Image 1 (cartoon, rainbow, N blue to C red):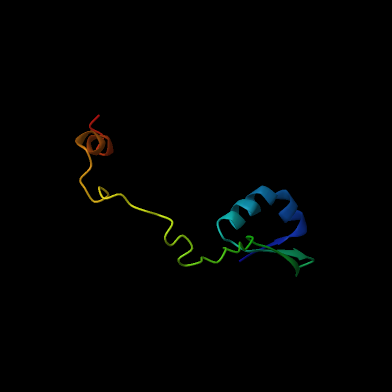
Image 2 (cartoon, one colour; image 1 turned 120 degrees about the vertical axis):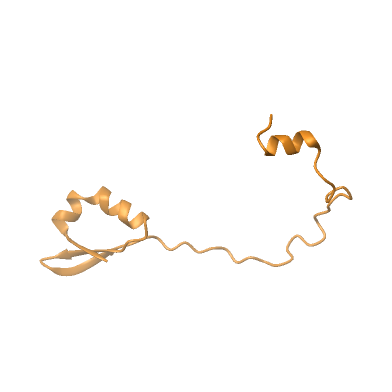
Length: 79
């Protein structure tokens, strides 16, 4: 956790934002007393619903068959 006074925070704002993007939490102080926190935004992930697409996806009978040689060559960079 880093502590910056207001003047230094204004002068180094871009640097502080870069640190926050990496997960750092910054304390902004006025006359040596903490007054604000600068930190990453907590993003809420939507809840995953198990079985939401059940019965809607079908795999063809050839799904487990080996890939054609031209496709395998493309994956292996042999083209």
